[in-house]
Image 1 (cartoon, rainbow, N blue to C red):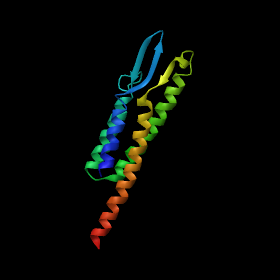
Image 2: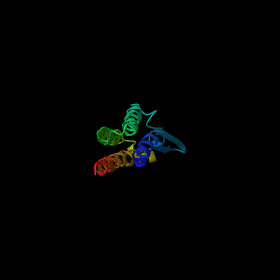
Image 3: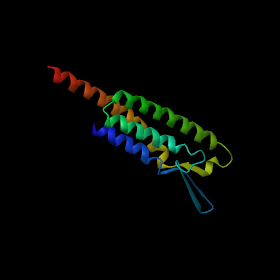
Image 4: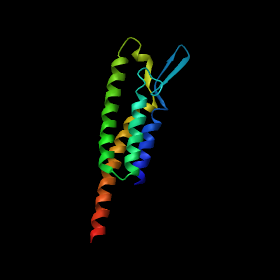
Length: 129
């Protein structure tokens, strides 16, 4: 299913976009997931690649499991980021496009996995008739 392949791409791209950004005294700073404070972007990329491999192997149940793990990782990252931004300088920092695209990509992976699984099951049933 093409939707499943594209959803993993959106999730990987989120690591290359600004996750958080700040503008302090005219100095603009952007932090991406891959070069972030915890380097957790590598886990996001790894889960996306594993998910893509499951799609290529047409193992949609495995893809759904990886997708749910991606949503859990994204929720953890959101919580961790919000905790780190609660300090004195938290009001100077705003969330970037990568912050939101990470969740959109993870949820899209889950939806695409479920739709792909249903489609594959229907194809299998129709070939038996």
